[in-house]
Length: 62
Image (cartoon, rainbow, N blue to C red; front, side):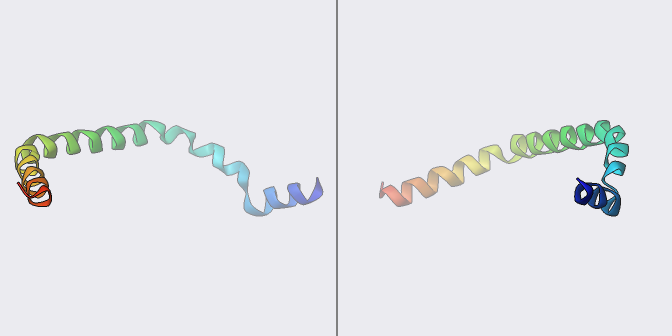
């Protein structure tokens, strides 16, 4: 138990609990990333679909 206490005090693990207030920031970053991906997919979706269909046609020999 002393070893655990020394490790906690050495690495100051108790300061990790101070960062819990940043959760809304991470939620916002995740939401913005999802919106960006959805927007890019909406714009480039048809072109990517065409490329995929071409690749499958070449592989299957049609």
